[in-house]
Image (cartoon, rainbow, N blue to C red; front, side, top):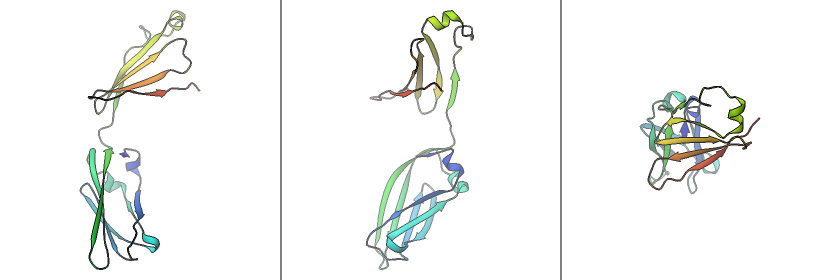
Length: 157
């Protein structure tokens, strides 16, 4: 996955390919981007993709394809899907809290619900902050078939 923060800096892609010679060509395709590099000692290869190129990628899943052409012309390719999340960032809104927006003694004695919405890729967020719980849980609930919620522990500092 490539997120918006990562897309602001150079990203190095690389690996090791066996049974090739130093100087054999490696072709890297990421979405509409294409690069070439060569095999180094030990089958090692790498390429640095600059932020100006990363910003051209579209949000969603894209294919990263790495091909090697050996010294006699044989080509071997491996593909993997990469999630790109750099342009359409989530928006968060909170519903009014504690009724009047002010925490008072009565609010401390009863459970409080802090709620709101996060808009990105059909995720809904629910947050319950009971008064007796020192470390509340954040429950993220995707709105898809068969999707399971997951929980994050929010710690007081």
